Image (tube, rainbow, N blue to C red; front, side, top):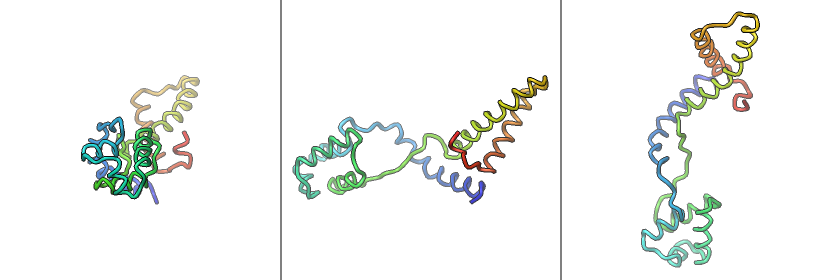
Length: 154
């Protein structure tokens, strides 16, 4: 898959994921979602245990595990089913994926240009800021198109 195909995929995914960004500011309840929703429904741990075919003590351990972020996704799905709600799992980038990729390319480009600029200054051939900016943008584009194998290692 070439750069343009990957860019198109990122842009399409960015459109979908951008709708989820408002949830980034929603804090997870201190006791976790399972306990919070169970209590909001007025459901006891005993009632949730019956609905999930688990022991009541297991429900308490699950709620504790979720609060500590030490819980399996399959367990959260089972709890959601028992609570009568939908379990949703996903990743919501804080920035567009395309921007994340471009920032990484910029990091690589700046590293490369700093070596070149340093040696040019040693030879008293420093370039203007405008020329540096153009060179940086050209190098970013080149890096994105070439897709070096160690792109994310830098």
